[in-house]
Image (cartoon, rainbow, N blue to C red; front, side, top):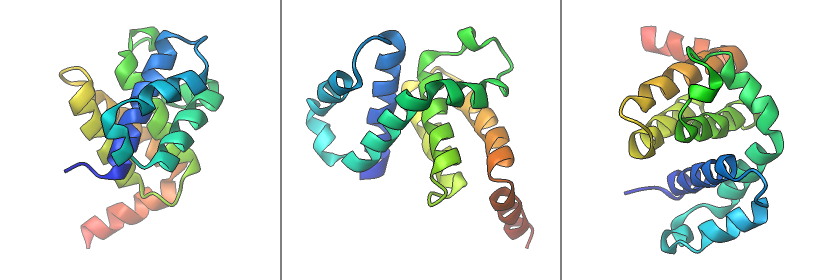
Length: 148
């Protein structure tokens, strides 16, 4: 059973993906299109809007944050995986109320659903490195808890 927050993230990824393929399409039109899906009513709309509009407004900065951890050229990254990474980078950098393991796990699960065969491994690797950078204290505390 998918939570409302998972559905919000899935719809945000779909919107970010659509925007990557059609960068001139207004965000409001992308949002309208996604809301036409029958399952949208089960999504956390506030989270969806925060993620979608946040990524579209800050795409350049978020791209820079994740691209430094790519082991391939940015243009060779699957657009679905890139959409997941951008959304997750926004959450990691601007939503400290959500624990980083939750953000990474959600990204991995969405990548398994929508991404390429091993896309979830790529997403996991990039987000682990980004989390270690932007949430160093939280990552260290999590590792310490695992050792205890």
